[in-house]
Image (cartoon, rainbow, N blue to C red; front, side, top):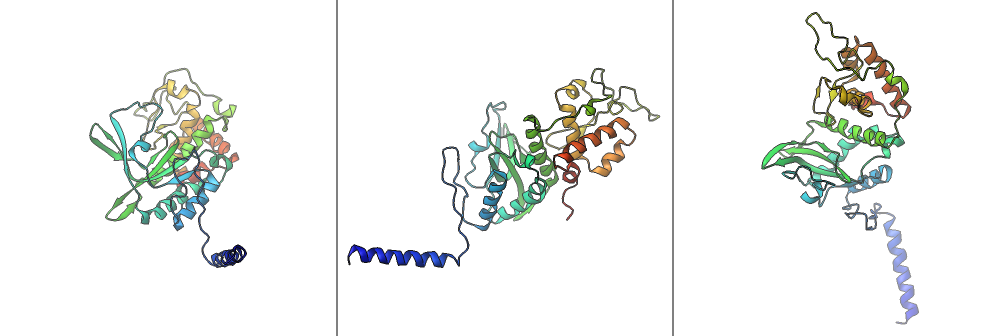
Length: 304
């Protein structure tokens, strides 16, 4: 068989293969390995990998669910807690679609604005039962981690073969707030001058309410300050330190966290008597509405 005949035969085979592929599901084309990528992406050729690839194309974050070892989870610029280690288990293949469903419903559905899309981390790890171990003591499950060097982590827990969605609201608030905080730190969210009108950042804070229902004129809510909600959204407490409130941007961010933490009807019910709080509440809502971000909707979560 001469070379000309071989060439014709190969051409015929190539056309046949190409034609047959038209009737098959479109294959995933892996992202070429680059020096700045730690993982091959996507990590498999399943249906959930197609969803993951589409998420990467829209939000720029690489969702990773394989090969996440302890060293990766514990990467840090400075190790402030050498006795504390982050530990997690791999997500079972049959649960990955469920993880993606939860992220879609509780995060991506609220990230239509270009501002929100711009501040996702490079990597988004999916893990099972993420928790800290401190000097051998196992700490509580962490549903989300947003302070990784170049990654966030989202974690559910498996019980009796099924995934639990305990604290899924906490995950939604923590992840959404991390996007907002990243944008704020980059100067993409501006605090209007009206937010500061009538606010006293000098005098000490009183937090007591007297038996007759009255308060001191320096009471924190009387002065327009809301309760302090932890960035992890685990709990809230009374605001007592004027130095914290007066620090750069913190008063505004406290409002963001409080609005996310407290559903709209409850927020209004709690603060109706505090005229300055209600005024500042509306100012903060308006800032984010103009950016295409509905803080109240994130707080309330999906209706179905």
